[in-house]
Length: 571
Image (tube, rainbow, N blue to C red):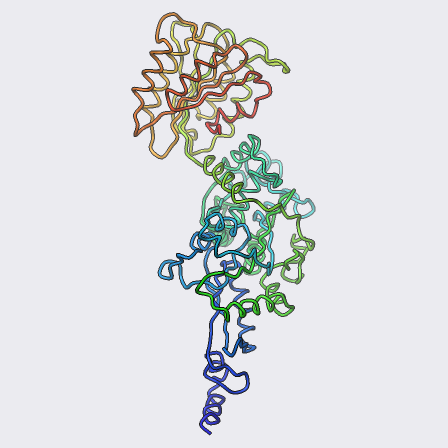
C-alpha cells in the first residue's frame, strides 16, 4: 500500500522518471539501484550528443537491475588527450570518463603515444558522425575568386591572400591587407588538420623541403592566432555588423562549425573551402575507456548507448546539428545544402597518420613558427662567375635567384641583415642591408625592398676572405642577440679562405668556441656551394659555433635548400 501511495504521489508531482532513473522504484522495470555513464565529448559534438543521450535517458534504460542514465561533459580533444590515463585527476581534469568522444581518431594517436594512456584506450572507437576540416573564408571574398562556380582549394585562398594584385584584378583592392588566422594545433582539431594539410597534403608521410616552403608561404600571411575557431567566428560577427575588414578573413574550422555559424549569421556568411586532394575528416569516435573505475554494469550501458547512437533516431539528431553520417554523406540537406557549397558526397579522406609521423610534422611546424634573427653573408668573390651545370646561370646568379625567392617568404616576425664578402676594396666584407626587423625600414626604403635591390646589384670580383668574415659576422650577431629567438649567421660560399693575412682556421675555431656565450648562443650555418668549396674547413667552423655545414656540390639541383637557407629554416 505504501508503494502505491509513493507512485501516486510521484505521478502527481511528475517525478516518476526522476525516481526511476535514480533507482528508487522497484516495480515494473525492476530498478533497485542507479548508475551514471559519463561521456567526455569535444565542444563540437557535445551539444548534439547531449540531446541524443537525453532521448536515450527518456527511455528509462536499465542494466542488470539498475536504472542507468548518461551525461555529457565538455572538454577540448587536445586537453582530454593529455589527461586520459590512470592518473586522471577529477580535481584537475573533471569527472572520470566512461566514454571519450574526441573530434577525431587522431587524438587517440596523440593520447596513445603515452603508454599509460594506451592501456585505457584498447578500442579504436566507433564513429558516430563526421565533419570535414575546411578553411572558412568570408563569402564575398570566395565569390570574388569565382566560388561557387569554381571549386576553390586551400592553396587558392592562401595564394590570393599572399598576392595583393589578385584582389585588385578581381575588383576588390580592399581585400589586399586581409590575412589568415591559425588555431592551435595542440588543442584544435581544425588547427591540427590545417598543419597536416600544409606539411603533408597528400598524406604520403613525406616531409621535404617543398612542404617546408609551403609552410613558410602560409606563415607569411598569418594575421592572428587563437586557441580555436570560435574566436575567429566571433570576430567575423563584429566585422559584418560594422561593415569593416577585420585582419583575419580566413581560418581553419570544421564544416559543422561553418554551417552552424552561417545559420545564426546570415548577413555575414562564411564559405567552406575543401582540400583539393585529401581532406582531414573529423570522425567523432565513441571510445569506451578500459579503466578500473568503469564497472561491468557500466560497460554494458556504454555498449547500449553506442548501439543507440548508431540508430535512426540519434542519427537524425546529429544531422540537425550540421553533422554528416559516419560514411560522410549528408543526411539532412536542409542543414548542409549543396547550394551553399556543401558537397553531398563525402570528400576523399586522407590516410591515417602514425603517432611517430604526427610528432615529426608537429616538430617541423613548431620550427617554422619560431622567431629567427638572421645575418645572411654571401660570397661575391671572382669564383662565383663559374657556371652551374645543368642551368643557364652562374653561381652568383643562382644565389641571386634563390635569395630573391627566400626573402619573399620571410615572416613579418623576423629580423635580418645582409652582407657580402670578397677581397675587393680593401675590406673583407661589406654591409648591404643593416640588421633590423624585416617589416621595418632600412634607411629610406622598406627592408624587404632593400634586400631584393641589394641582391640584384651583386657582382663577383676578388678573392675570398672567409675566416675574418665569419668571425666578424659572429660577433655582430652576438650584439644583436634576442631572447626567445634563434640567432644565426648563414655563410654561403663556393671556395676556401684565400687570404694570407688575418685569422687562420685554427684561430677562428678557437675564438668561436671560447667566445660563444652559453646563455646567448649564436649558430653559424655554413653552406658549401659547388665542387671547389672547402667543405672540410667549413664543417669545422660550423661545429665550433654549434651550427652545421651543408655541402651542395650540385647547387643547380638544390634550389629549395638554398631558398630555405635564406629564410633561416634549414632542417
